[in-house]
Length: 440
Ligand code: SF4
Image 1 (spheres, rainbow, N blue to C red):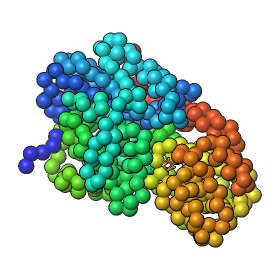
Image 2 (image 1 turned 135 degrees about the vertical axis):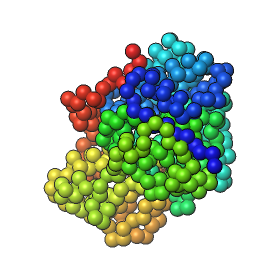
Image 3 (image 1 turned 30 degrees about the vertical axis):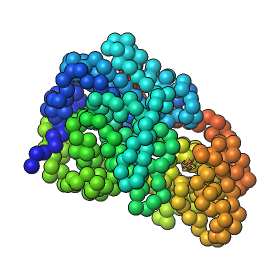
Image 4 (image 1 turned 90 degrees about the horizontal axis):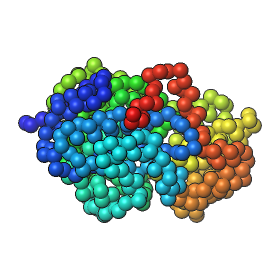
């Protein structure tokens, strides 16, 4: 049986380490030099207002520049970088432009002629990804001769890991992204993701593990300096190895189980040949989830603070990114609002499928999906809807205040500034080096 080759190397030297990994993996062997190559980094979030920890969250510019240099050495001149960055306002084009400037993509353009696009300013085309699903992909990605997929080696609170397959979601338009977070118990997010491969041009996956992340995908996770590169021409093989390196058996990772089922692959890595470092020599366990209390009704931090009179279950995988942003701010605001006086038996529901606990006095419905689902639910005594898709900050604050949870509006108004709070974790740790996110 022909095996899929995956190279694992340590990142030790600019360009040389990646060139070695690519050589070992044979991932570029089919390239002739005249291809149109599309590079897909992972730039989860961006804000112009503050500096936040990028380690383990965003693909390093170092790896992106290394990829460009290796492609150039192989005679490739038509290179495009494209990403669909999540910003608070999807129509905001200045934040993505700021991201590309700050990450050194303008320098790559000047030096090597690399083009870079915010995919939300480009075209999308409908693609049938099977099982009755159609989603709209960016056309620069679809029409490339070769895609260089460059995710970060990280775990993810909803999908356990976020690697090559999950990175493809950033090529969808916003309605398609929302569609991926279905309510169908047979077809959750982790079932949808492996279907995205059906749209993929020939490709190679370079997993950037210079910095890895626990409890990703965002800056509230915890980064480590790991100096690992994983390269393969087979995205599923790269992801299976990536999951193992993060300490998670593919058989325990639903997105891998679904990928194996859909694409007819074994889960035990028996169709994979590893070259370079051994998995066991580079692997280290990365937690993927935030702890909740025993009955799963409160974040462990709230439980420890002694919060009473509130049930605020963990968001599930039906919640899409834009509601996740609100939910992150809401969690923080509720924690800061706790003054030791029990709240009035309130429940907060989110996502697309959560059901109310009968008997609660007040039920806050976060987002239009919850509002629609429970508009006539007899199990709810007093519904407090926060309408909108995603809901607006002002409406969220007003409803929380009506419920008696006196959240501080400034937390929502300065949500982008709040990201800088997470920088504290990396203070005085020289291994967390901002220069990895610049092009000299
Ligand atoms: S309301 Fe929230 S969960 Fe529902 S589709 Fe909109 S963003 Fe997604």
